[in-house]
Image (tube, rainbow, N blue to C red; front, side, top):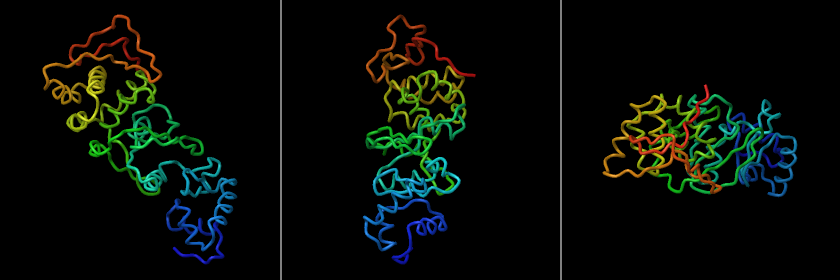
Amino acid sequence: MMLDARSSLVSYLDDLQAEGRITFTRDEAVGALGITEGAFLKSSARLQKRHKLFNPRQGFYVVVPPQFLSWQAPPPAWYIDQLMQHEGRPYYVGLLKAAELHGATHHAVMEFQIVTDRQIRRIRAGRSWITFHFRKDMKPILAGIDERKTDTGKMKLSSPELTALDLVRYIHVAGGMDAVATILRDLGNKVDGHRLADLAPHFDRACVQRLGYLLDRLGHNERAKAIYDQLHETNFVPWVALEPMRRDGVATPSAAPAERNERWRVLVQREPEVDE
């Protein structure tokens, strides 16, 4: 789309929306409008103050449609795919947000949680935050990433199986053991046991043991069977604590466990509390 050099940035934004787009880069706008970078930055700053334009990352802009002016940004699902393309990073929407999109949470999720292969600072996105969680190698779990249509295109979303594994792996950012167990009670119905087993080797063995125990406890025994068989292909499975050490270094209670689950070799310090 080429515009006359005299065309305003406001007209450019209107034309973008008429084409079904709400994102653009600084270089695109400068080239289309035929103006200097300085002139663009001044104009964009004025629109950002009026909450008509959102700038989540350097050089990347999101048009704020009228219905979201009070929010100061449209929902992250509307632009996350384009944002991560701009960053040049693989990604997927995961953890609590993925669980919500799979219909397995009872509360609104205020963080739009992304898993990617680079440490990225969180972004204030109007009423919510976009937070980024690091996974070094994304290739092994590509089979666990699905595409979900959005109002403005598409985004990448962790499957129920990948979501379940991630919730246990990133348990502290997922709200702790009780929150994860509550989600898994509903999410477990959507898990395919064989697909789960395909993904499990790319997670720590302890994570798989904890997930297996939780699925069993929550009544999803059949869905956990494939990962149980996979774990016990080896002769020795070490014991693990159900609740891992926190990131701040505080260990879980060292008192005698309430349960020693022989099936999964999990030491249960306390029984998870599931919200009704």
